[in-house]
Length: 274
Image (cartoon, rainbow, N blue to C red; front, top):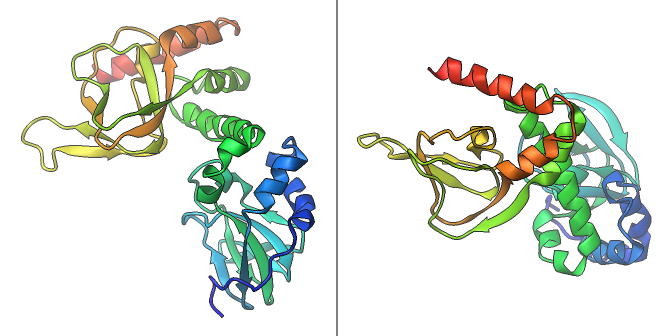
């Protein structure tokens, strides 16, 4: 029996409702949507000592332990065990994040796996779940991304959360431009799904470099008119988060001194470039 073995039965959806309720991420999702979610859980069997997830590699999905016991391992050391009813890697429903730890079966075990692709295909039928997942992505991933950018690092945490909520989700068609060399932007873009390409000056090989999930374009555009240094295109289309200058200014206006912090950081950035 290998890792992908599917048992001939799946515990009833009603038995998984309580397990899904153990996921803090899902605590505000109504029961009727959790029941729909439970129906998407894929049962998997693991042999003793079999590894299901590896830290730093793409997460296989949110894991619900049905039977047996699994070890959570960091740096080759087990740090805890998961018993029936436990949840692992709920953040994998929010985005394409790597597995936070290695997961290995201590004994023969049965788990349920909730894969993001399966959930994404049903989100139209679960509007509250979509709202929860979108907010979680913004507050976990997008705020962390903002903190990693020097312009926003000195902002109060609540101001970064508010900025994350002020982004608009936009689906761009194939060939769309996010930025054009020499042109002024009035929006800041963060890639949510898909890939963009930053075009390099003529004569470079390769002629472009990829920008993947979490990478960004035009952060200075929310502060001032700053001509872009390169063209960025979405050759195959993508989903991005867009923060306009107007939304940025309106949001930071609620936090005393926040805009001044960003302007100081922008001045430092420009000095380092020049």
